[in-house]
Length: 155
Image (cartoon, rainbow, N blue to C red; front, side, top):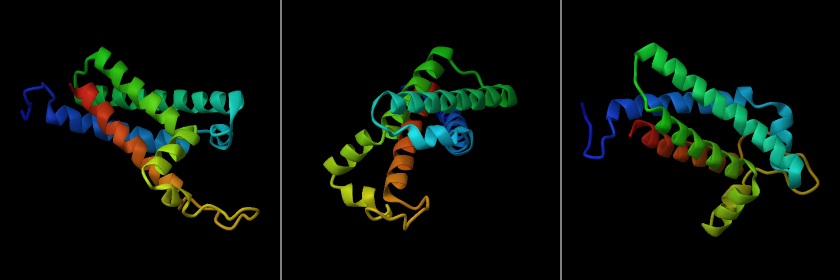
């Protein structure tokens, strides 16, 4: 059913992407601790450790979602493909959540002003919300890499 010459099955890809997207929402917003959220972008080892801890729980959430997908549907996935897909997801997630790399990418692509949209003005706390350009770029980065990861897992 709907397999292209590369062997990617459209139904498998769709199911895997949905599972990874759901896991992303849960892992990034519910499973992540406040400590991880507050510290993952800090410079040096404290930031690296907090980010690695977040990525570990995030990736475990994705693996659990895939296990539930398999158990609930009988879908068969290649364990190596799952490992590669989850590794791509984990590495790309770590890169974005360290903050500086994503800001540099946004600046290089001419989106630096959008990245800064909604952040508090220096010395003020005048926009305590999720509605920032940095958050929007972070989430779109993650979802784009989930697409790649789902393709790798479904192949």
